[in-house]
Length: 261
Image 1 (tube, rainbow, N blue to C red):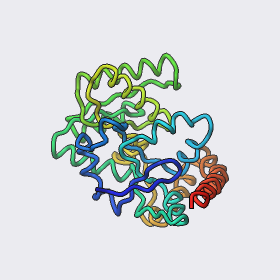
Image 2 (cartoon, rainbow, N blue to C red):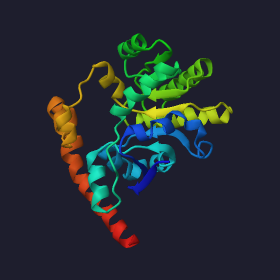
Image 3 (cartoon, one colour):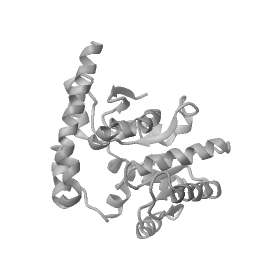
Image 4 (cartoon, helix red, strand yellow):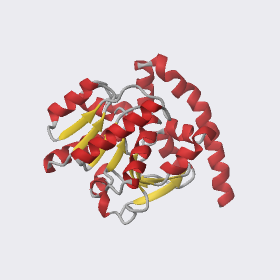
């Protein structure tokens, strides 16, 4: 069984590689906590950890911390774990998880429902693996009539298609809120829940719609710099202003750590 490390309110999985946890993820219904925790795979990065610490996201964070599998997708999380001597063994990213799970599901002919940001992405995924269904929802705001309609549409697809996994690849926190709403609806109707994987742009990286940073930058923890250079207009707030909020969160977590000691 894998180990977990408690940081920033989450129980992060500590493993040398995704190979150490992929069997646990794919056999999620055998997990002793399956009935008591959320059947979710989350891969929080530093930006998401910072945002989930904000007051407006506290209720969301309280729910998400009950996920079955929480992977540390961000070097700032790894570095901080070492600082407080709760060392996480490795960074485990959603973008690395997607192809591993996808290929295993293909080999076993397991059904996957993919919620994608655009129709063309769903078509590319369908060409790669025919035993999937996909859905590209219209633009929606959380807690709106369109959100409710999107949720119901996905619930209906789950009832008909009966997927083992639901991969949701839209922006944070919409994918998390949507997963929670769908899971809640399924639970009320006593329908067995699939595993929800909130993986952001991982499908886009897989089919080549977007490019990840070169491997050497990933290993140096500079993937953020590559994304900033690729999309400066969209990413500067996350990585420049976000660094200030991350340092504040570090300070808050350090106080908590030393108080507990």
